Length: 222
Length: 222
View 1 (cartoon, one colour):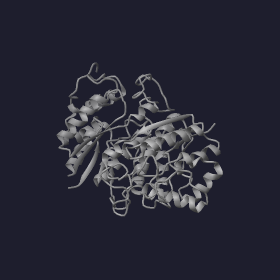
View 2 (cartoon, chains in turn orange, purple):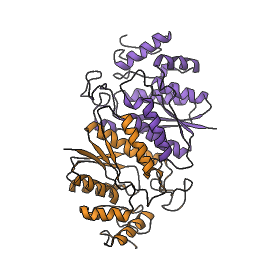
View 3 (cartoon, chains in turn cyan, yellow):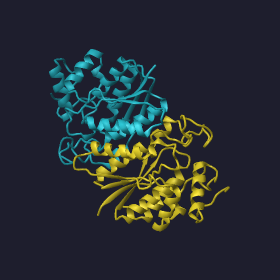
View 4 (cartoon, rainbow over the protein chains, first blue to last red):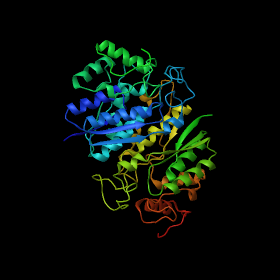
C-alpha cells in the first residue's frame, strides 16, 4: 500500500488534504507540528482526532518551538496583538517566517525514513496571499529540494492539492469527502470558543457561508 | 554591518565557514542544532566556544530531536553501530535523512527574523559523496526555496563556500584564517577522546596529514 505523510495542523485545509490522500488510496502517516503558537493545545487535539478517524498508521507530534524563540510573529509572540500590525513589509503579523519550509523539511525526513511515497500539505495561496511560503512557486522549488536532497532510491511526491483553490472550493471538496469539520480549528486567538473576529475566523466563516452550509463550531461573536 | 547566520555544528568545516564569514566582514549570528546525535554535548561546547571566539551577536541552540525519533541513522539510533552497515541503498549508516534541509529551514527562519543578509553552511560534497543533502544541486535548489518562500523584501544569500572543496583545502583555508581547530569535534563515537577509527575521524586525520600540520586534538587510536 502506498504511504503518505500528511501534515495535519488541526485546521480545515490540512484535514481536507488528508481525507483526499485517504480517498486516493494512501495509508496515512500523520505529522503534527507545534511551534509555540497560542492555540497549540486545541490544534493538537483536532489533529490527533482527525488522524484517529483516518486510521493513521502513526501520529507523530514534533515541537518546532524554536520558531517562537526567533519571534517576529503574532502567533507566537504574546507581545504582538493578533491582526494588530504589520511586521514584515506587506505581510500580516500572523506570518511565521519560512514556517512551511520547516514543516516540509520535517515531513521529508519522516517520509524518507518511513519510505513513504508522498507528502500532503494543505497550503493554499488565494486567501492568504500574503504568505510567501504558501505560493505555488515555493512548492515547486521545494520539490526540487526533495529531489536533490534525498537518497537516489527515495521518490517522494509533494502534493499540495489546494494550492490554487480558495477556501470555499476546499470546503466543497471536503464535504464530498466527509471531512468532520467539527474537529478542526482555525481561530488564531482562542482555544475554547473561536473568536469570530480574527482573520482566520473570518476566512473560515466566509467560506462556510459561500459553501452554503453551517460551520459546525461555536463562536463568541459572528 | 552585514549579518550572517552561521550554522555551527561544532565540526571543522562549519567553524572554518564562520571564520570566513567574519573575514568577509559579516557580524555573526551563531546557530547550533542538536538532534539527539551521540556526541551532542561535545559538539555543542565546541560550537559555543567558536561562537564566543568570533564575538557572535547571538548563539542560539535549536533542538531537532525529532530527527532521532524518526530514526534510520547510526548517529541517532543506538541500536545501529557507527559505520556498521548500510541503511539506505548506497548511503552510509551515518546519513540522517534530509538533515541539511532541516538545518537550512531553521537558519532561514532565524535569518529572516533578524533581517540577516546571508547564511553560511560548511557542507562539502567531495569527501562525504554519499550524502545527497551536501551536493551543489541541493544547495542551488534550496536557494530557490529561500527566494520563493520568504518575504519580498527579504534577501538572504546562501553561502556554501566549501561545497566543491575537499577537507585538505578547507583546512588550508582555515589555517590562513586562524581557525582554532582544537575547539572542533569530528568523532561520531566518543565525546571525550576521539576514537580515530570512525569514518569522520579518518577523514579528519587524513586531511591534517595532507595539509602537513598536526591535528591538535587527542585520539584513542591513530
